[in-house]
Image 1 (cartoon, each protein chain N blue to C red):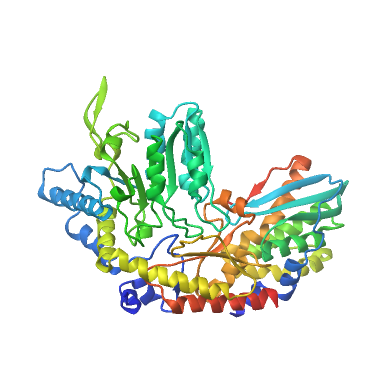
Image 2 (cartoon, helix red, strand yellow):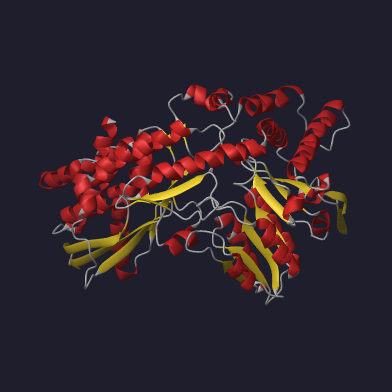
Length: 403
Length: 155
């Protein structure tokens, strides 16, 4: 059991905004004191550039940075620390794979398969990579309930499939995708598999070896860590076969005007000075999550999701969007006759922070025939009282627009 | 909560629910689309000009209560105005909602400016100002572009 009142005391934002109901962790999570203070302390005590200096401080900073890599490896149960690449966020991670791997491998006539639940960040990079190569982008559908349709997905696979890129948990509907089965089916066809883990990482156990994916991407800021840092996990031989992406300092072994030799992964993909304090902050955030245990966090958020579905389903004129059988931590809805933007403004006046709009998933909005939704997304610090406040604010909204 | 009533005044809610001049014009001389990428709202503004007088104006599309009411009220005040008068009203309206320097209007337009007054509640909601100005920007683009007007975006 997670003691939400104790958890909230760890988050200064709630101390400084005691009346705030924060239901937008799907966009970015709030930061615990351990992360905020830990970053400041790192700058005060151990900061210098990494992998460069001969002096002790730089060695210490490098140790902290590489210690963060080790923490991420353990968090994902990756086989090797060299499989963990520090990037700016999931968007950069996916662009890295789409451009480096895609640029080297994709040929005319090849196919890349995504799902119709993808965030633009796991759609546009593949669209561009396919356009460059003359490859085709295919979209695996969800069924009428919002569940990923494994049968329809399997039917899309062919010997031409080179990459399957899917989200682990939808940022719009909260649908949990059967990524283990997706990876197994894709590998049977000889395709690579990338999983966008942004919404999964902060709220459920993730084991990249058990999933069997080749790549797994996530952002630090959705996992209670700082923004500006994220992770690309790549199976070592997959990374080792990829050409450099961004080039410059830190990713070379030798440079001459005649040519340059590049480092092995992960450093090959870490050109320039990384977000050192960001990596340290991410480590602290993952430690914070592990302090509760991801199984406990999943149970907490799953129970709250069920409660939210129950409460929202009782509200007249309210339609929950998709979700399927397995929905985690995300409640997307519309109120008949009221535009999501107007709902968002009224909720804000009740100090209930939600996201409104298309959630960077315009093709999904088009499929659903809506311009946007109101999205409440949960974090470790939310409880039933937050859902009740949400419901009360929705009532006020209905009162204003539908009476 | 008083702020919320300032924003969603009765007349705004009414125009949001029952927009006036909400249809395409059959024979427009000018038209342009407005698009707000933030929320996906779209509006098309249609004009029929005779010389420099706006003889008819209408809109369609989908949007929030604010942008729908703003478009509806805009079409009401613009009908029958000259292009110069319409531009003056837009300049005044934009200054009012963005907190810019007040734009003086000729006496003849003061009643129209008053009719737009309820929309100025958006001042207290900076993220919603674009909802109120989107149809006006589409109107401006239509004036400039004839039937080939660019789509104006808020972002």
